[in-house]
Length: 94
Image (cartoon, rainbow, N blue to C red):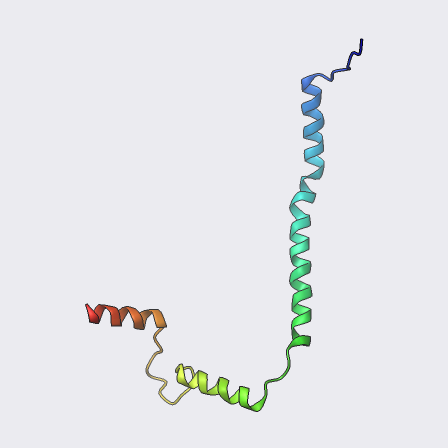
């Protein structure tokens, strides 16, 4: 009848350990290399696709920064984060 040649268990473990020890660097470094490549390629593509702001967009951005208090004459008053403002209002309301 058909007899299969069986490799002893300890030899199977040794083969598996040898295979794992050979290929674990690939399993670790290939994803990092792929992520780095994607990061670099997206960084190099972004300046090309970004166009200069138009005059109306520029003035809108300037008005937005002034209204947020990021630019202005009153440099002594610190700007509170939005969470701090809402938590103060909530504590005053209760």
